[in-house]
Image 1 (cartoon, helix red, strand yellow):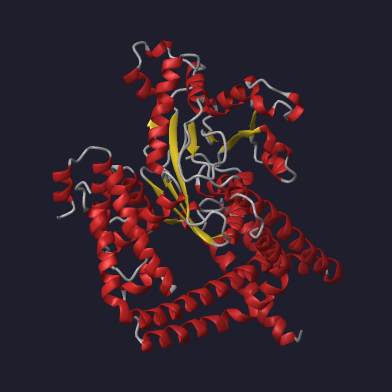
Image 2 (cartoon, helix red, strand yellow):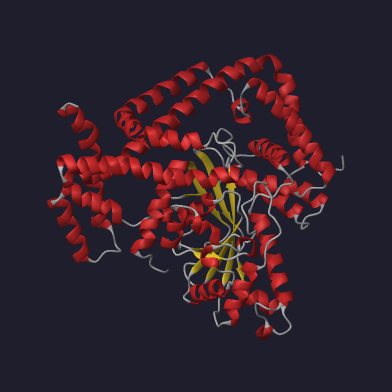
Length: 103
Length: 446
């Protein structure tokens, strides 16, 4: 593989990852100032090894999971499903169900 | 909020990676936010074998200790994994030849009581076995006995959280999963409300155990898929999808599968004659769709030739950017990916597929990546090994993203072609589709 190709397929993602890691360390509020400084120094002095270590130990955030809440969106669909569930549980009789789904 | 340990974080990352390889999308829906701390028993349906555990380890914010049959500890790799994540073995009479010949569950109960006393989160699959049917089996009493016993041992504030796992196709590689948490049960409040003498309720109280088991089962049925058989599940899911598409704010988007499954579950509770009418209408419409080789979503909105071309250009541009990284990913991961794909061809039950596949994925990808990282380190030194460690997941993600884009583009082309074919039978299709919607919203006897 030529140097240019290697630079593209290995260098670009490593550089991007290194920049993202530095930014993330700088803004992390769960780390003490001393630990943040140590990570920044590690990433600056040993960029690739520091990045690999950081990738292994950085926290995993469950906020990254896609959540389905439907707050404020698809209200007609949510109301329809709610009515169908309440009808299935016997909380709505047939007439109330028809009203709820706009029939 | 309990701070996760380094091991918790590492396990969360590991299972997130595995789920990222095995599934195209994992989404969660919480009826109420999960308790940030305090003793919790998570109960879930068990359609997917080991996959269920991996999905839940990924999505449940506080890593649960898994209570599972001791036979699992005998499976290579899985046994080691279960010990490492702190699983608690249950000995069943039918597994008498079990681990270390143990048959008593005293140790299991003691471990569970201690975990709950320490404010931990336990995960149990209260049906006791992995199921191939799309329904909830009558629950065993273990979950109720664990929490009532822990309460008697002095642990207060236990919350039981029911979780339903909905697989788009549990045997398929790169399908979608929805995890839906139902309404939690406040154990103390429940015992206060149900028992004449709350202080006397314990794990040996048959009435209390039966009552609590019934309540857990009811909440779990509401959260999890619960159909008579796969034919019913398929038909009601299509019917719910079709009926909901009419009511979306933005009908061009796919129907959220969380809403679709909730509606399909509600339809499954309709009287038999209504269900039959829905099923017949859905089967007829499905036959039309199969004949055209397209989904309902594909027919609902017209695709112009210009739109197809624009989509092609956009996908091509994104593909070109991803291509060099995806090629690297394909070279490094092709063999382990093919090994996992080959496992999908085995003629075994879907639940067995969903257990074997994660194990094979762990071993195959682990070996392939290990070889690459070790080779890089041996030839070029520690920095090269570190670079390989960072780049392996990047290349894999690029390869998967490119494959998903190609699939998306192929589906767009198929939609466009099917629409042209459908032009001649539009009236019949419309009538069959309307019949599905009508059967879903109608509650009159057939």
